[in-house]
Image (cartoon, rainbow, N blue to C red; front, side):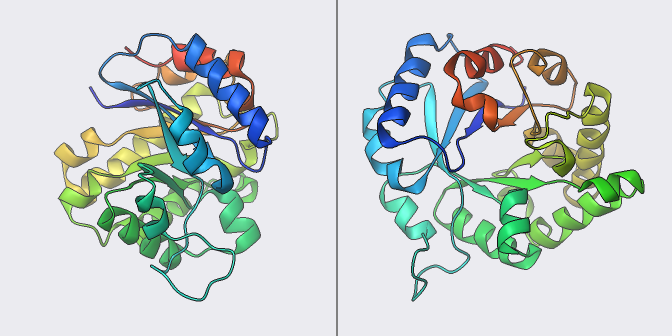
Length: 253
């Protein structure tokens, strides 16, 4: 079975002490995971190195929320993949809709980020998804396919198998709206079909595709039960230990 992943994205939340407390709660309450389940927590940059040293559970791995598209250089305030690798960060979120919208990241820049992550043996969690206007015009399949094409289709089969994809309908992020489980499955199946057409069925069937967009403890089990949904990339609910632990418990066995 594909890896089932509960990924927490803290975004720009929590002080260092609050983060310490939340991680302790997660470690204390973490259910026994099976070999095909993983928990990933994307921390704010200042906390990555320090909190990584405080995690004692092998069940929790950390992620960066972003990286720069250049390997190094005069980019004040930015963080490179080389820096992340130097403190053994195993995952990095690439192309979150907030990065695309607020910082105008392009699909070409995201392709560069993907390349740097793979070269450093850091697993990218590549985000894709459509805004409300695209969904209302029923153009979501074409929109998401273009995101995949322009950021991932330069990879070969071996490299592609190292990618995790997170489908996030932008209209459902932080809005309280959630795609129905059928809508989530429909898009996840479409994404897997696009991957199959480009990379073949073996690659497509091996890639974990997560759903993101107002996932909560109360709806996670229904969403994760869909055959092509392999867990979630969770924002607000990941800031509450009890809620996120319910989401972890909803992962497929």
